[in-house]
Length: 335
Image (cartoon, rainbow, N blue to C red; front, side):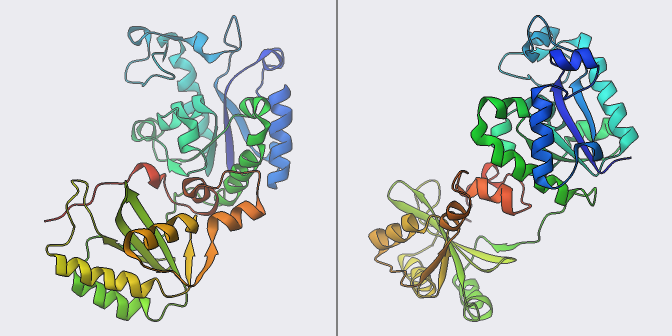
């Protein structure tokens, strides 16, 4: 048994000669990055989705064909390319290794490993976010496993600016390796409030708070909703406009009353992500000032790690245990 399993893509020339994964340039970089992350390559169980070398070139597309040639029930590995049925045994072997080792966390190195374990190969959009193995994969494995997708070291060799991100993801894997469960923080978010709800939330949460996290969502020149969080476990969303362009509130008087709460709450010390955008939009659209914007997560992160991206979705993968929430937003409903 092992705490951390590393799953790569396939052998290269050096790996084929040695009969084991990550002995070439990618392996050298991976070992270096793991050391910076605070653990050792030798502590991990290391394998590939395909323990063979794609030929004639080291390109996994050589293992693919059209949909009719593909393994039944599996999605495309890349656009229009399906892994051929003759390589299904490689997935069986990988799953046997996982069942035998029972790792607390599996680091899916690259799009192919993410495809095999999460049935998703869009590595850039899912990297860094802890996720359970795909239900179909969990059924084959006998239980759910915790997966952390990140960039393959071969990709980082081609774009070395991704190296700090890979190290950060491996550091997260180390933190997550103590338990096998996917643990999500508890959040209590009020998303369809009435005016009575705003009054109650104001009294119980906003007034005692010393700092409010504030975030707006916009569409065109409209603010669709505004979120306020007095602490890490609780938040409320004040909707203004629905997707159809109609007001969330039943009457203009209700909307004005809701905006009074927004105006009052924006006077408290505030934390933003890219606050210059939100503050400008609040003032331009509603004439609401934010006189005490004291913190900005985007600017703080950028000052600390200027070599990294600084968008909210990216920051969430580094500093939280949330799922890929940017891709799960739903339209507001209104009765």
